[in-house]
Length: 155
Image (cartoon, rainbow, N blue to C red):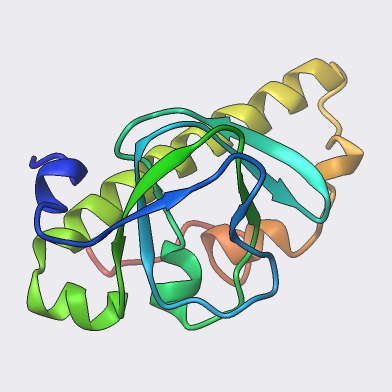
């Protein structure tokens, strides 16, 4: 699979100074931001959820592809450079290989989130759901309406 940086050749680069927001939770966005160098802090509802230093990490894909407000604030922890793919939805239509990079990143995040949720449940010890993940709609949103895996019709 092609790397996100290889894919970004030819797309404009944006420099962001330490302390500046790249994306702001609740704001509008239709671009993809691919980290070229630096480190960023990801904040959701004012809570730090991640620090990312991985070259090639992509941000903004949720808001850009789903046409929803930005889901997290992204702040440069140090001076950073990003490749910026404006009008992401159209860019994916024009260059489908971008969709593979997005899918790979989302799959990685889902895998890490699932492992984290399992760890939280194991730490609870008694099999009960940790209060932070006791959202009755979570399973439905992740796996389908009734909490079961989404039926893809291949049975």
